[in-house]
Figure 1 (cartoon, rainbow, N blue to C red):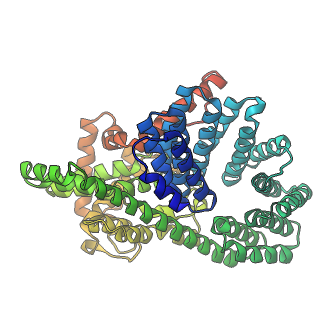
Figure 2 (figure 1 turned 180 degrees about the vertical axis):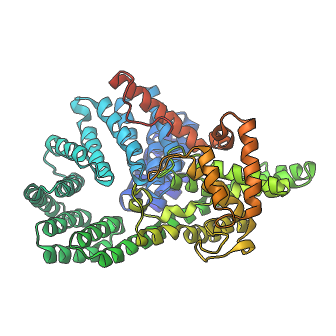
Length: 580
């Protein structure tokens, strides 16, 4: 298949465009189904470019949807959402309801991957609304209800999840193909786990038996593992803990070979050991899950950064090289702008990843941008030159990129973290610094220092290495103030937004304890001036976010959902927070 893709690339211009686009789409889908999602990116991207040149809108919609699927499956949710935004526009322009449903489903799945469960549910509800009772779109209803059930399982909204799972199973036809059998086993897995959460043990056992029967027919390792997870949890809930844990442990060995099922298996083992009152064993598997997540996320992130830099390299060596234009700018502007813009373009992918990681507990996507701007203003207040302030703004945006390696259950927990969870949460500083250090982008030292040390405290009681006083890098001390202020004044899953005065009182109280005393004084003056000069400080600090193609695409999607929900509910009780 790789050879086919390379041969197709050699054909000239738009000759046989339709056939070539379909072949490239088939190749991309082949790699996707085989679990080689990075390999699926190239043919999908080639298909998109060829469809644009040929001005073939239906095939462009198909190709760009596949490209979005490949991006989502490789952890690049921001690029996936941009693809789906364009695909939705094309589907609506073509008045292709089936294509529109397909795109909304894939968008919802991408958001589910990113742990943005409420937004994923809104997408799936929109699919159900668009599909209606039309028999031609029945399959989309089933997929939508199945994904709502899974989202509700993560959100612990068990009543709503059960309703969705029941509708999904009741409307599902008897599966025949391998793909249909695997899909049905996964649906039964979600249904079983939801039933167990409400202590409906007997019904859960019935669903387990159905899952096992379909898994045997499918001859799929993924379906077999999904059925075994359901069975193991059922045995534990039914009082046969030894049998259930033994089944889950043996399933884990198989899941380590099929990485796509590893996380679900580890989650089940954590749950099982919590049920039987062995928290130390639960913690052991939770740590393995986190390490697996960290490795996968870091590998994916670095691959995307490499691809981005390679693409940037191709642009730099084009017919009218950017390097020449930058050199001219450099000469005209004394060498400053060119270097800044080059650095900005190089870190674009990292910035996207940082914003996506933050979206799990900051629904606006603007936290990183606000922190960057506020840190740059504080650096200027302190006396740093303009070039340094510019670099601080870009580097500070990446301060929490390490959160890509923190499990959803910890990052989204509404209650206070226990000691073990807090230790895992603290690792995001070193995970982020390690990721930035491996990115092979010049001038990343400042961003690495910020990511690693922005949770150090002036008195030496912070983390990860308990630096104190001026041993903490200046840029990390600056970013710490900006980060805490923004976190305090905005809503999070675990807290309400504080008034600005309350946040400043708290920062003042921690002067000389958590924060650099001199920088704290500068910060108080800065915020006071911002309040005088700007009616809406958030809007001013988050201005750069409005230029993000990712957040622009996200806004267009939410506006479409908002209109749909208003139409369904008479304009009230929208399930989607339109600040998202």
